[in-house]
Image (cartoon, rainbow, N blue to C red):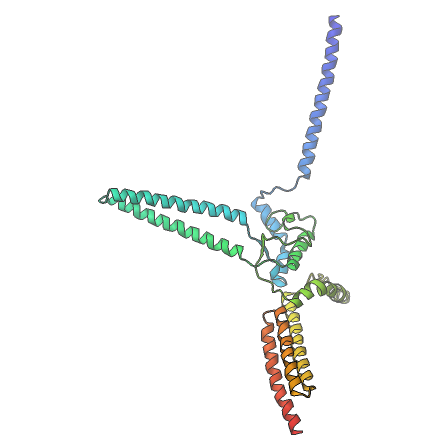
Length: 322
C-alpha cells in the first residue's frame, strides 16, 4: 500500500512540475511580446535623439524655404514653473542669510569678519536676484510668444505623420504630442514668427490653397516631370513670400475698385447736394474694408487715394478745357 501511495504522489508531482513549467514559459513569451511591441522609451539616448532630429531634414527644409511660421515650439509651462520655484527658493534663502548676518553685525559692530561675510551675502543675494530676473524675463517672453496658426500647425503635423516609420518628432518625443490634422491648437504651442491674420489670407489658406495646388500646380508639375523625366516633389503649400504677394495683390484690387467706383459714381451725380450725401457714405465704404485687411493695407489705400487725387485733377482740367 505504501508503494501505491508513493506512486500516486510521484505522478501528481510530475503533473504539477509540468504545469508550473508551462505557466512559466507562457509568462516569458508574453513578456517578450510586450517588450517587442512596446512604444519607444521617452528617455532617449543622445544618439537616438540626434537620429530623430536628422530624420526630419525635409521638415526643416520646408520651414526654412517655404513656411517659417510652421516652426512650432512648446512654451513648456510646467518645467519653467519648476525652475522658477527653485530659483525663487534660492533668493529667499539668500535673503534670510542676509537678515542673519545683518543682525550679527548689529550685535558685533567691530567684528571685521562680520563685515566681510555680510558683503559676500549681499553679492550672493544680488546674483540670485539676477538669476531670478533672467528666468522671469525668458518665461514671460515664452508665454507671450506668437500663437500658432491652425494651417501651419497642420503643415507641421502632416510632415510628422507622412512616414509611419518615424514615431518620434524632431525633439525625440512621440509625435502624438502634436495631435492629428484638424485638431484644435493647444495654448502650449508657440510659433517663431507671427502669422498675419486677415480676410484674404484666411480665404487663400482655408478655401483656395488646396484646390489651387491639387488642380493647377500639381498637374503642371506632373506634366513638367513627364517632359523632362525628372522627379519633383509635389508642393504642400504656397511659399511665404508668394502668399504675401497674392494677399497684397488682392488688397490693391480692393483699394482700386473702391476708389474708382466712388469717383465714377460721384461723376455721374449732377446735383452738388446729392454728391455730398453720396461722398459721406462712400468715405465710410472706402475705409471700412481696411479693418478686415492686413497692416500694409493702410499704406496701399493711402497711395491709391493720392494717385486718384492727382488723376482727378487732370480729368477735371481736361473736361473744363473741352
